[in-house]
Image (tube, rainbow, N blue to C red):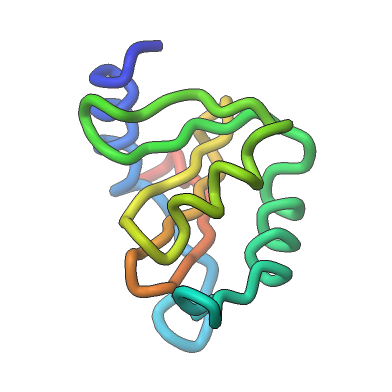
Length: 112
């Protein structure tokens, strides 16, 4: 699937996501720069996407399917630096990251 199509589909689907409830409206702080808590990010990633290739959604022209082998390395270049989302290949599990060092997890609710 090309980047533009991926962007359009997930932009539509994100309004049907039920975010897991945490202290700050689903958002969990993992930090920025040298204060990033990689163990938190990596453990959450492993729980949400165990050994799976995932879609990284950054924008209309720079979204892609990232192989599971390189996902952790790729995240270290993005997390806490820019806004982006991760979706599984079935498009029903999502992690959203903000540039200010926050993340949240959710699942697609097909009834919405």
